Image 1: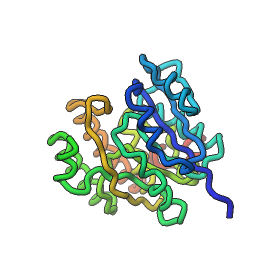
Image 2 (image 1 turned 120 degrees about the horizontal axis):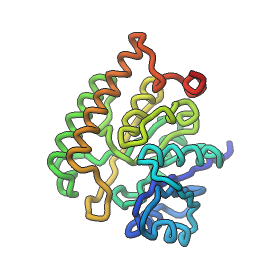
Image 3 (image 1 turned 120 degrees about the vertical axis):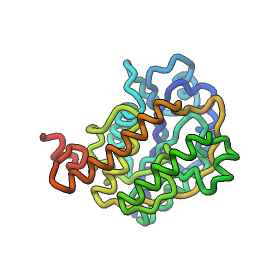
Length: 252
C-alpha cells in the first residue's frame, strides 16, 4: 500500500518568535508538507515561515482562529493530504510528537487523535497552566465525556490530527470562525461516529504562546456547552447544519 500523504497545517497569527522553533522540532521525514496560513499578522511571521521552506498562504482580512482552520483544511485537502495534523506555531505544543500522533491514524486505530496536555494535575500546573484554566478544562472535559459517551483526557487541546475521511465528512464550514470551532469539530466527529483518541503531549506556557484570556474563555465555555446541547437537540429531531453531512449542509 502507498504511504499516506501527511500535511501539517499551522494557523498563524503573530508567531515570528516561535514559528522557527516549532517547524524545526518536527522530525525530518515525518511529514510531506507544512502549510502555514497567516491571519494578517503584523510581524515577520510570513517572512520567517517562507525562509524555512514552508508553504505560506496569506489572508487579506483577519478570519479568526476558526476561519483560519477552514483555509488550512481546504488547502490540505486540495493538495491531496491523507492525514492532516494541526500544530500551533506558537511553540506551546511539542511538535516532536507529530509522527507518533500520525501513527495511530496510519494504523487505522483512530480517525481523530488529540494531544492531551493534562496527563496529571502536577505536570499541567508545573508547565504553567493557570489554575482557572485547569479547573475550567477539567469541568468542561468531564461534562463532554459524560454527555457524549467518550473517555478523552482533554477536549480543549489545539493539537489535533485527522484522516482525510473526517475532513471530507464533517461540514466544518458551518462552524464558528472563533475558538469554539475546535469544540464544534469534535462534537461533529462524535455525531458521525468517528473514533477519537488522545496521547500525552508536553506543553509550554510562556509569554510568546497564544492563550485565551479569562472572559473570552468564559464565553468559550458557554459556547462549548451550547454545542453539546445542539447535538442532543439534533438527535431529538431538531436538525442542525452542524451535524448534517457536508454535502447535505451545503445544499441547505
